[in-house]
Image (tube, rainbow, N blue to C red; front, side, top):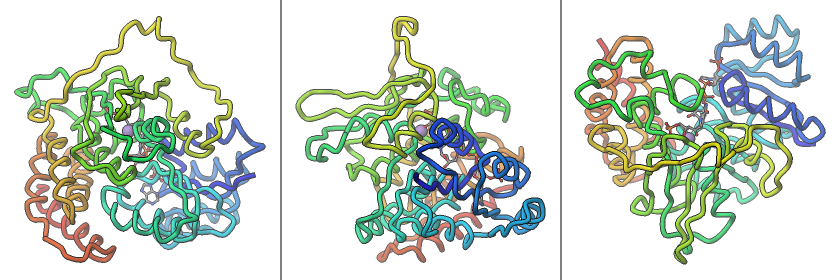
Length: 380
Ligand SMILES: NC(=O)C1=CN([C@@H]2O[C@H](COP(=O)(O)OP(=O)(O)OC[C@H]3O[C@@H](n4cnc5c(N)ncnc54)[C@H](OP(=O)(O)O)[C@@H]3O)[C@@H](O)[C@H]2O)C=CC1
Ligand SMILES: CC(=O)[C@@H](O)[C@H](O)COP(=O)(O)O
Ligand SMILES: [Mn+2]
């Protein structure tokens, strides 16, 4: 039996993860859960799944949950890190939203856990620190949950990176794939939240609409698989059935396909290299008829181009880009700025990225905080 600590239990990935755990009660126990404010949903999960430990990031939510359950509830970043490193935790499934996911990932690595990582911001913000921590803690094991990276992970199947010519990350293209750039100034929040394939949390849905999500995923892939940016390509695939591909040096292009259901990569990330049964839709290729592929439009989707540039520049660029994007996406969700203010704002903030010699955690956290402050100043 594996004890799972589920960070971000009330969100889209958290809910899919609980769906996977429910299919395998003989194999997984939901040992600990964490969320931000939604203590009522956590209470419901606790009653259904016999959870032992809890953290609510917000102190008021922690108090309310503790009163409801009559059990201790941790709070804040210390609480998240404590659950991630709890001696009884076997697998940490990190589905927190945003850069708050970084320190719990690090805490889990330092405690030599198996981390199934959905929180892509961890690697965008602090890829070098995370990869160094993984080297220093060889018993820690990180498996990707993000659908494209889980697909690449499956295609690679532990082959050495020398055999890889190119990673091909698929992108749905989001709701504005066919919109002319002239119409982008009229984009409303409702349009941007209308993802053509996936039902996800609001922040990643806006990132998909701006294609910043694909930019974050390029950086995520670079750090996960140690592949240079020059060998990472994006291919637009509106049906989202091919989840990504690896071009090997012998001419073989290996793809992973499946229904667009996050339960598939979540379970794979928890059980790899074993494949266990999963009740979910199966693909019927004849019914699908055709799958289409296109080149991405870097001019229309400036966030994608910006992310590629920041990744190549390295240093603190990806951390400042990520922080600025988080602040601006949140402002767009609150209808305080327009859609195009996201790429415009991110571009302004990354221009102010300080050069750095020693890329340690403290420097990254300081750059993240400064970029957030500068981005907040752009919001009316
Ligand atoms: N959804 C998807 O299909 C995919 C998501 N991902 C990645 O997975 C991560 C989660 O995405 P998603 O599930 O869509 O997001 P959601 O917004 O649906 O869920 C976010 C979760 O994180 C919790 N949370 C947010 N802030 C904090 C905090 N400060 N402390 C503790 N908990 C917090 C929320 O709690 P509360 O409910 O209390 O606010 C909620 O449980 C993101 O990094 C995303 O990019 C990657 C691939 C696919
Ligand atoms: C399900 C998943 O992994 C998301 O990251 C998804 O890929 C988003 O869709 P886009 O391809 O539109 O960014
Ligand atoms: Mn993805």
